[in-house]
Image 1 (tube, rainbow, N blue to C red):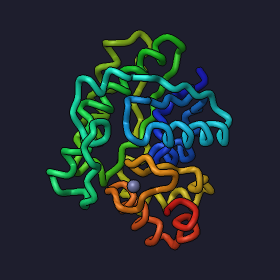
Image 2 (image 1 turned 45 degrees about the vertical axis):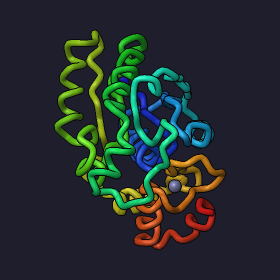
Image 3 (image 1 turned 120 degrees about the vertical axis):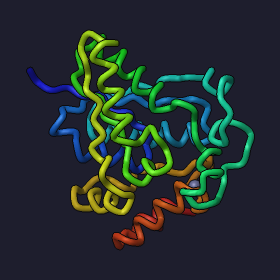
Image 4 (image 1 turned 90 degrees about the vertical axis):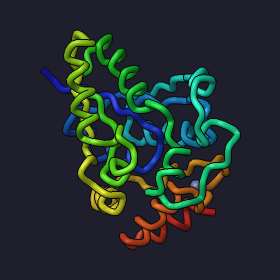
Length: 221
Ligand SMILES: [Zn+2]
């Protein structure tokens, strides 16, 4: 049986590189992007569209307008996105979207079950796994296990970057000619990356560590 995979594509660094790194191996031909009322939704959707076009895969945007109504996080509410460094539990808590990956993976599993996809790929990584439990190997393995009984097709959840840090991920992108100029990793809604939110700070650091200054000029204000 040919392998067929869905990717959760936010347009951010991790999902872009997970796609570029794994699309041949797993046969990724379909990307799902979620609009859950996050401040950066418009930019993320635009970036995801360009990325899906670049890789010539199908793309669907799923609106979860109601997520905003049942959660409270700086990414969707009228709270400012914190400028502080990842790792402080307070700032991490403010950008935590309750059960986000659990929800998104379950929606992807419904697609997989309907259309016969064997794999669901998402961009969990080592740095975020330290703060966010839905980026860990434990979570990945447990969700995969649930799909053995909650679906008929039993899609496996794959996180190709789970053992890699942001620095490693930028390195992989450069070594594999993954189009970093298409990335949209900022939590805020400006035209370009703000450069001060947690996500921007970490992207910038990883680009500098890998001599990727040319991308800083393209992406940041
Ligand atoms: Zn930013």
